[in-house]
Image (cartoon, rainbow, N blue to C red; front, side):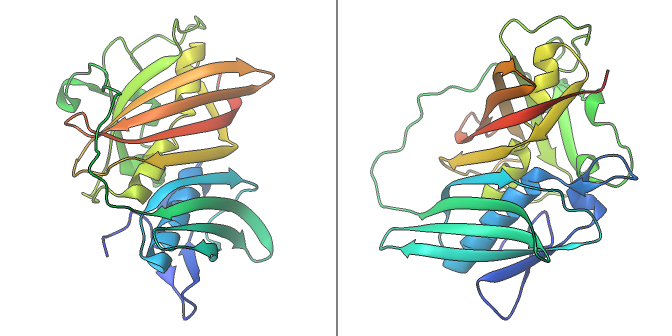
Length: 268
């Protein structure tokens, strides 16, 4: 098994796992930390893949409540359908009797001669030529301090947040995990939860949002240190925003696509 970014642990029941909540998997102000939503999806993906020994094809999380350190999240894996090539599964993540998130997914693989992508990665300077994002400054021990984010001058992060709307709602950034964690489906789920960061860029303000959901569709995982995240915010209305992300390897390979609906939050 590959090393995970989070401390998912097995139990005597192969369908139950648990995740201790440390500061390193949480976000928010130091006095009010809560579990990062992408950790919920990522841990559920890892629990299902390890229970079924099959890779995730797609997974979608619905976030219902907050979990705070030092609590422990239990993950129960349910498998209503287990076929020859694919399984349909569900994870309920809860702290005691309080349900925190629900994840539905399909897992499996089939032999196929076809492998192609029609989507191209955006033109972007290499990470070493980009600026560290000022939006993810180190505010102590939390998840954001464990990820490195770099942005291209004039495209994202370097644009003044003066209230001027983006012309296309698009932002592009490089992301990698500090510590050399291998790229896998659960790591992509964590990075994909940065879709809300595009809301502030689209609105030209400091801010983002809280995820209501997170859907990840896996195409092909390849070895890569950095992930190029192409974020599109499609629209904002009535306090909610909708957007997606395409996740590319350093060589331009499309690894996954993600989408979310977000409660808009402003830090102005």
